[in-house]
Length: 247
Image 1: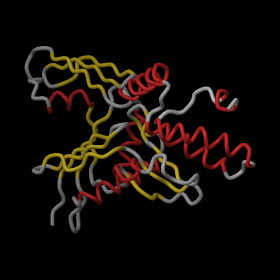
Image 2 (image 1 turned 90 degrees about the vertical axis):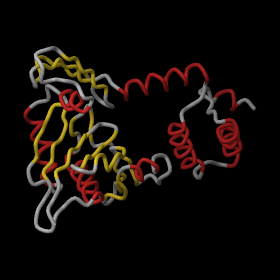
Image 3 (image 1 turned 120 degrees about the vertical axis):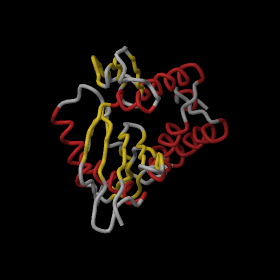
Image 4 (image 1 turned 135 degrees about the horizontal axis):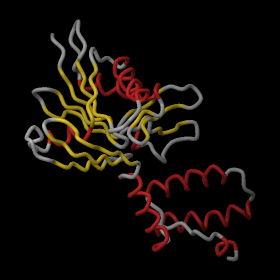
């Protein structure tokens, strides 16, 4: 069997893989669950995302990419290898060719890290292309005409802005303000105005507090139970625990 040509959008929040002739075959979160004591990868992608806030203290959910580039090389390699094995694009004696999107204006070192991670995960030849150019082609824009086309690609870790003409980028800029920052601002607004934490935040708080529960004496456990009751029944966690201590 011959291998296939694949395109990978290696995003901070999600990884998308397109197989030539099939379209997008994978769209999963860029999350890896690892055992911190052994360093073993437990789950990758959607399965790892579902484990966030529901695991014991020795298991950690890691996002190996930050601001559109690799922050943890080994974890990124393991994640890519898992995804490539999952979609089964390797031939009997050959490896797939890969085209990977990357932010504009990243350094040569960051480009090399992406290529090496892809090659070690099973790629035969790895090509890099800037995200705004790929986004423009995917959107059906006529970038090969002698006219300007502006693209604003808002991802999870970076926002890329580029002007394209005659098939190439004329000028481009990449800023580290994107979807993750939007999420954080929305969460901060909800927390400030409704006194309520997000689902993931509540899970993290519950996990931390339950670990402390086993080390408390009987009096403190009653006060602790009052806080947990509010969290479970009303979906709220008191930002000022002092008012519970007075009861």
